[in-house]
Length: 295
Ligand code: HMG
Ligand code: MG
Image (tube, rainbow, N blue to C red; front, side, top):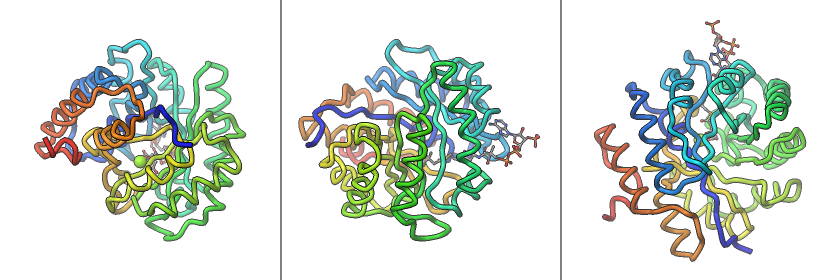
């Protein structure tokens, strides 16, 4: 049942950098993205067309997306929370966007300043405009295993939103454990419930590693046949609107585990580790990837 080949969606330049307070030069962001592409990653979430008042680090989204020397075969996707962001992304030459909602009502309010139902209404015109421009739309669901504000999140809320977003035309639903709170049986049960409504091939895992559970959770879900995993180089990441959220599972660690299981990723681990050291040096700290630290 476990897939022979896994698609990694590298979210470091977006999920990773959005959480860093000191300003990162636009050229450094672009260099990071280009190095990631050189390491063989084919899907790189590059930036986020959100309000600069909400996430100042992403205020150069246009310059980043339009400044990348694009490698053929690589998709450089971005977050677009509303039409304003989508239109700007279109001008910058985007080919894939992601909308982001939440299974938790409380988190929806904190992160995008609206209810879940309002967010779905807001996503509709983005999806339509994207389809008219041949742009793929991915959807995130946050707080799939718990919320920093409301605590427990019922699996039914995750399933309902996943089904809704899939029916609206999103080709992939990325299930976000925003605060890295889930454990393997819970992750498997949650994903299993989603697969009862949408095909497993349209599901991605987006697990933050706050409590060191991400690899175990991924492993548990791989057994269900999931074939897309989000991760961030050097374990960067976190959401500025999720209290206590820390990094995503490190791409280096995911790639190491998958290669050890005989699963293809197309990623050159050595080049990826070098890229992780490059970006960690920018922040003057060690990479959060365990594989990188092992030398
Ligand atoms: P709002 O304040 O309700 O929006 O924010 P508004 O329409 O009232 O606009 C307020 C101001 O923002 C206006 O400017 C707009 O022009 C501007 P003013 O008139 O005051 O000068 N504005 C924009 N500017 C640039 N680009 C835009 C844009 N939209 C409005 N797209 C909004 C609503 C959704 C915009 C806001 O809440 C927002 O930007 N939220 C984003 C928060 C965020 O980025 N969070 C992190 C990403 S999600 C995440 O990390 C989770 C994930 O990784 C999965 C997981 O781990 O679970 C995906
Ligand atoms: Mg995230």
